[in-house]
Length: 204
Image 1 (tube, helix red, strand yellow):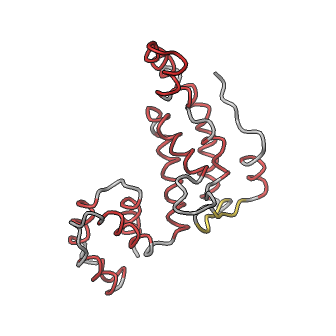
Image 2 (tube, one colour; image 1 turned 135 degrees about the vertical axis):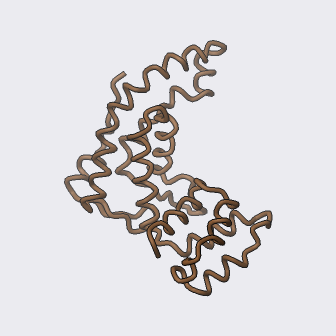
């Protein structure tokens, strides 16, 4: 399967593109039958995209055609690059990295399938900027505090970028390899740096 086809599948699985755009891409991709095989291709082009449960059903079908380890790696590295390149989205991206760290949502499994090497990013999500938290602590003045904290985001982003770069570099050097969802191999030296009991503390 070509790399751009994999990426299109990944984008659909994480919701970066909707089902209408995905359907249009399927019908316009003349090489898709060769890449995924005749049977899978026929299933796709005969799929009922108008069914009320089409999105969920199609995601299950597509997930069976991709290698989960590769997909998880793409998901994590993509999110890390976004975090590095988009300081204005620091809060939302840290929330996303927390979900990857914790393995939530659980995907009908009793055991969370997260990535502990993301803990220094995921556990530093800016919880004090959550609306409910601010309203509980500051009442009607919560928006004033949000604006105050928002101005401090560049300071937090600058502190966390080196950690994101370190993890990206580790993927490139094969010091971290994803085997399956929540299952990975990490070098001993990197494990000591990223998965110790002491989580990086932001300077406020």
